[in-house]
Amino acid sequence: MTNRDITNKTESLVGSRFTTTELNKKLSQLFGCKVQVSDYEREECVKKDLPNLDDQLVASVENELVQFDLDLYYLRDNGGRFYITEVCFNYH
Image: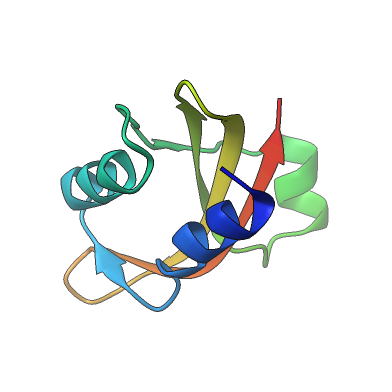
């Protein structure tokens, strides 16, 4: 799986709305392995110095082809779903 493949798959999430269950299912489907997102809790000093940062979910994707960490930035919609605004990944 190339950088372009990962970019295309993760960028396809931008502008979509998901519950946690739906997002886990979608990511698992995209990458062919079990993926679970979790909230990213910033340190208090970051919250204080940069209070306007988007909320963030994180996940680790590990299959036989690739291993990377995924950051998903989001806003909450009126229904409580995650509206994905931006994605970023880093190999580990």
